[in-house]
Image 1 (cartoon, rainbow, N blue to C red):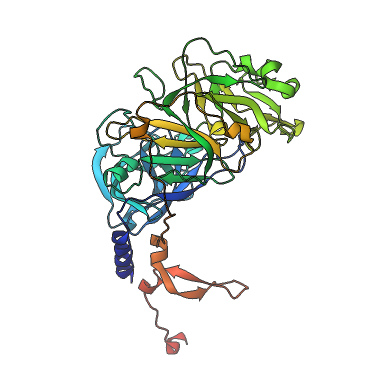
Image 2: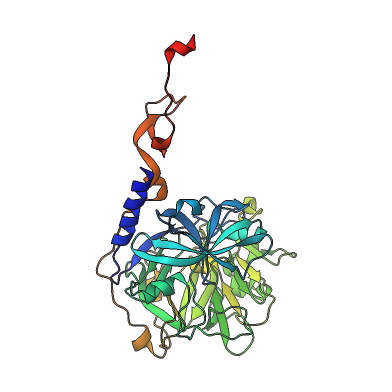
Length: 447
């Protein structure tokens, strides 16, 4: 029974279409940001043959992919990969370059899929077997999915999952769309779904410098306060990066913003700053729909939502929430790091680098958000060079779907059995019950 189930799922894998297509995968995000719980987005993927569901944490700052092993020590999460159940799993016998004593694993490969629609048969990932590193435990559950390809300008074929999908000609377009907001969180791979955003996508080219602190860096006009004035951040070009594992927005001097009522707005009278952490707190009731902060990119202003994006703090009984702004002490670019409060307020597209096209980020207003037509109608100041070549995408004509038979489902018995001690009549299937040794009762031996 087990072998026949494995064969069935293997045939299902081979039957998946390899024509250019796209996939829309729901994200799992917290309804509210809080300093007490996990604040980040996970997306459902499938590893192995037969497939095992892995809800990987999305990291937009790296290109690596990792899954936590079923026997991982101190790993955090709810889904773990059991390599012994996969007929296509391979150890690659090479050390993991990012390993440390409390966060370690082995380079591996296996079949990996988005919804059974887009599939790589030899996807490379790290199988983590030691996960006691405190930062990883706090920011990454189940493993991580790297959604950033580096270097930016290169014809080198990387082992990133999105690059592999593109090289195998499965993707309709070399692009990713991301919605981190709780209204309709999702990851689209291979297309930009017009149902996800409104207005013009504001494309900016990514720039890199070996001395900078982040590779996914792009130019910004700056940050504006409540009154629309730019918050001082020095002279010259300003740069920002996005970080899906940062629960705040990091600036180089949060006090300049948080102590000036001209920037903080009507809530300014209630602003407090923690002298140890330099994190600002302010009123978080429904009176103010936006954090009094706007990120201006290429002539377009993106307001940061207040609803669900202020971190709850120990001062919640006083009607205050942490603003989600923290100090960035490093003076190297980027000047700002835009974490979850920003990402949950916008739609983000990523045109990853291929051939002669560098990487680009695109920003738009998430459909269904509380935005006026005047805000949605804003147009970018400039258009990136090579737009006709690099930023013209085929529109999807339908939404592909597929049925996944996971390893657990493949092993479940066809018959259902009563639960011992249960008071109701419900029955459940059992895993691999057909292979259990049968017991023969001989009543004559009981006396």
